[in-house]
Length: 378
Ligand SMILES: *Cc1c(COP(=O)(O)O)cnc(C)c1O
Image (cartoon, rainbow, N blue to C red):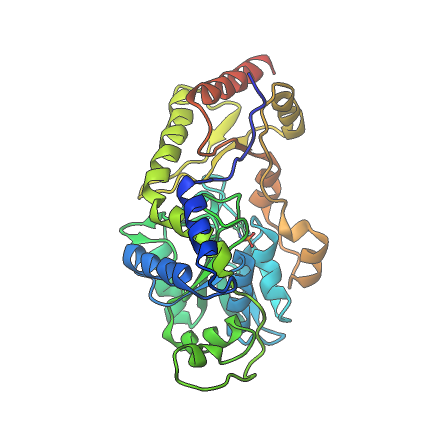
C-alpha cells in the first residue's frame, strides 16, 4: 500500500481548460470579470444566494462580517470554542469581547442550551459553525431566537458548501454567511471564499468594505464616474484568475459530490458493526449533505498513540482544531474564563480520516481494517 494522503485537492480538467481560455482572452486578471459573475449567478440559481461577494478566503468573509457589525468594546460575540482560529479572531480584532461556547459530544457543535447560556444584554452576534458540513439541528429555531433578541446570526459555513438544513442550503439562515474555497475544502481556488449577505440592512456597506472601503462598485455599474474612499475596508477580493479555476468546480459540484458520498458511505459501511467501545462516529447527516469530512471521536486520551500507529501504516489522519478558549490569544480576548466541560474533554480526542476525491475503495477498506486491528490490540 502506498502512502495515503489526508487530502488531495480537487483538480478538474475543466478547470485547466477554463484557466487557459481565460488567459488566452487577455482580460484583466484582477477582475471582476465573466468568471466571477458566472459563479455569482450559479450560487444564486442553485442556492438562492442573492447578494454575494467572492473573497480571497473565508477569513476575509468573516472579517467583512465583523466590520459590518460596528462592534463596540463592551459588545459580545458568541463563538464555539471548537472552531478554526479566524472564526474568533475576525471579531476579536474589532475590539469586542468573545464569549466561547461549549459543544456537544454527539456532533461536536453547541446545543441550543449551551448557546443560550452565553447570551446576555451585551450579546451582539452569534457565530454558528457548520462543522464537517453538518448543521446544528435547531438552525431554524436559532434564526427565530436571534431575530427576537435582535442578535445578528453569522454562519461560518467554511465547510458547508452544498449542505442543507431541512430543505434550505446552509448559508441561507444567517444574516451573513461565510464560505471557504481553501484547497482543504470540497471545492477550491487554492485560497478563496464567499460572503453571502442575507440581511438587507448590510448590503450597501458590504460592497464598500469588500472593495477596500471604496464605492468602486458604483463605477462598475456606471452609476458614478470616479470612485473614492468612503469606509474602512480592505482588499478582500478573489481575483478573476482564481475564479477561472474555481468556476468549473462550482458547475460540476454535484458530480464530484457523488464521488465523495460513495467514499464516505464506504467508511460508514465498514464501521457499521463496530462495537462503540473505543470510538464514536460523529456523522449526523439527516439532510442533503456535502460529505466534507469523516471524523471519529476516540473514547480514550491516546490520540497521539493512535495517530502514530496510523502514520506507521502510511495513513495520514489529522487532528482537528485545538480549543480556542485555551489558546494564548483566546484567553486574552474572551470575556470570562468559561468552564467548557465537553470542549475540554472531547477536542483532544477528535481524528479526521483521509477523505478526498482521489481516494480508492481499497484504501478506505485498508484504513478501516487497520483501525479495527488497532482497537483489537489496544
Ligand atoms: C477552513 C475554515 C475557515 C477558514 O477558511 P479560509 O478560507 O482558509 O480563511 C474558517 N472556519 C472554518 C470552520 C473552517 O473550516
